[in-house]
Length: 326
Image (cartoon, rainbow, N blue to C red):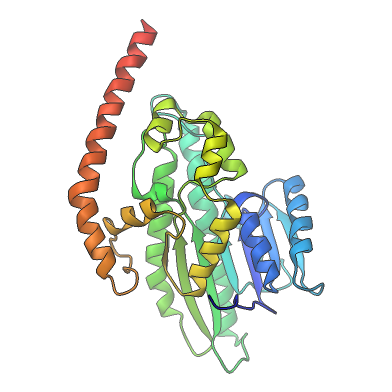
């Protein structure tokens, strides 16, 4: 494995950077020499994360800023981005989660659907929109004086939930599907902006379950059926040993971005296999041979088995629920 790519002099914005995967990404990028600005709602966790990122810096001339705002408010996001002392070179859209919106459609509130879309899709779309606006305006006024095109990157931290519909995650899954559609579409749109001044690239990561504060909160609100389908109906200590840490997923994701990969499923073979059967407009990885073969296997064998199994589990769960209600 080669040495990590230096980010000396580069500026990285990370939404959702106050905890979990966002904070882990921020700390690793700080070790590469980048200036870091994290954005999230609560000031307390932001301040704590800032201290950790400062401690992880490669050198003391790196700036670390923490900005509190509502990432689902487009005007506030754009105002905050434009108020920063440096234009970002890289944007990681890592805000999201669903611990407060777990449940079946009949059991959650309409507001839960709206909130989940705000926390996961709008927080990504508005941040990406602001970055694109800032970058394209900078290109028009000749912001880059380098002999080489300035690399401008957006990385969406999505979820393997975008590849499948699990009962009990009915607010979360559509929001993550929307983020994938956003990334697929924007990947093609930014080709219009590539020029001698700048090169734009889009990347989308689909981590499966990993150990983080959000993961712990989600286990407290997921339905028993959801846990059984996901294989999470067991003690936390056992789950902690099965799944990677936020830091591991962060390292794998950043390494895949360094390689220029658009679809990133580095932490889970299951997520990788699921992608192969629903590539859609996304480019296949590598030469596409493995993805094509795996897609056939998943479509013809894996999904029919899983679908029948989950349908049976849903029927049984419904029967048990009705018996308890009698």
